[in-house]
Length: 231
Image 1 (cartoon, helix red, strand yellow):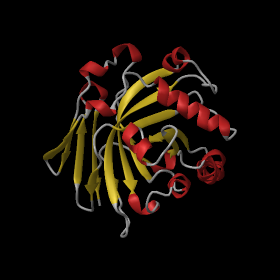
Image 2 (spheres, helix red, strand yellow):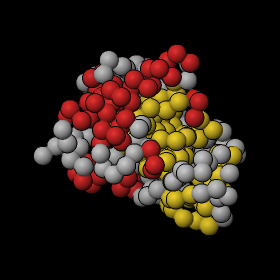
Image 3 (cartoon, rainbow, N blue to C red):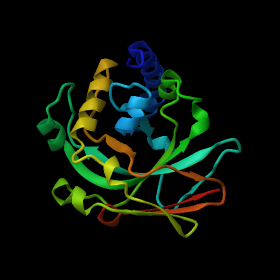
């Protein structure tokens, strides 16, 4: 049995209420994040698809910056591929529309705080914005014609030690399904995937626990490099 659609709807409604109160009024809109991108995670929670959270310019860091961790945070870092959209994407877009909407790719690091939601309550998880704490986008931008999944790879280092490399099964052949899911979910709540939005597409390797004092570096080859320190 699928997770109750009502719980998903309530969680998304709570999340987007917060988004409307902060992002649109203060012009902090950056885009969206994909959660539960792995089929196994969707099956574990009986979800109909990947889930969606929002990204805020207010919670965006530049490569090389320090992140000030709160005392009670339980942080993890995820290496991800980010895609930018150059046109509005309607609900029920075709695969061709979704793929042609991609303007650029880059590397991303997402910090999540697992204290934001407890357990597997999808309503609370969605209401808490899928654990999102902060995001770093690499400075480089790769055009769609230059992106190939076959050449994708990365190395994630924590305090100088390699701790993760690419898990190929976590990255789709193309991102059309995730883009369509995002557009459809937003449309259900009166919103739209818009030109200029970034989407971070889900962890491309298992998340890594981090804490104050840690130095993180991600080399995603032609998609860019990122460094981040936890204070």
